Image (cartoon, rainbow, N blue to C red; front, side, top):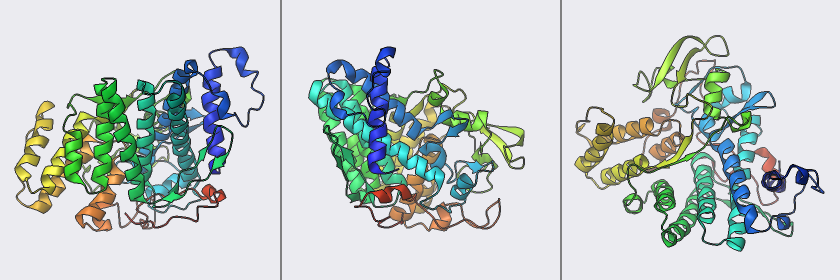
Length: 435
């Protein structure tokens, strides 16, 4: 779908949510294909517009349940097919993703790009409407933060060259120029800085913490570890911001739960023979049977055990992990271990001993990140960073060698931009597909 199409769909979804307060209003929509942004007016419409953004972001982030007799993958499920999941079903698009053999025309990838683009476009529109009708409100700051996190997710998961198009209130599509990976993170930082300023003005520690963790995450991706540590330092370890799920409709179900408990499509990483999750002490259960394909050992990750389980987007644990990495990069191995062991002690885990070398400390840090941030959409970004920032080889951090469903793993290390984006005359394909 083109940039114009996804923008129209995003605005349509928001408008229908607003109209949903009055069932008769839904029938009065004059053109269900293109909802005019200019009609989304008034302060009273903002809460419903906000809810529409959060609903769209949930689908893009953690997925949804049974949409038209099939699940809907979010970025967590698809990025997790690095080494957090293994494929346990027969759908070829997801098998190719699991095997690191991805094309821009891959149907699963096309849908994910649309969903994340829709969420980002809707958040941008909502932020603009808040600026018009309720500037500086908590909802205004939150919508900018969601826009910022959308940029971070694009930057961590996709190749350089993602375009960010917009649609104006007078229905003019403004095609966006492709952004490099680092430009996406820089854009996110600017948005998070705006949120921090707004949150301070309204004395919202929750929103300020959300923006600080997002900013720290973007800075780490830019190898600006000292700034990242400073950004997250005020964030309490107890802080958490989650994307909610619901049983109101299948679409609102937690999609990670759906793909484990409803369809047995993905199997947990304990089934893997190598990597940080092999034999690890994760909250998972070996069912003793196969997944959907009738062959793959089916191990259920219990982190999302209910359709209504929320999915953490940012929390104080991530803030401490960012500080740990800052200490590591500054040559302060003891400080890194102190922070990591503080987290471990909070849940009754034994402390880590100093492994003795910088290389082994790096291994320890990324293993801790793998466990603490399991199934929250961080893993692919961390694999990329190990190659880009820590001089690791692709084969040493990505699943490589023989693929268990036949053949060998491919060479992809990032997601390609959807082939449908070729409708944007400014987009000519990925600028590069390096980590």
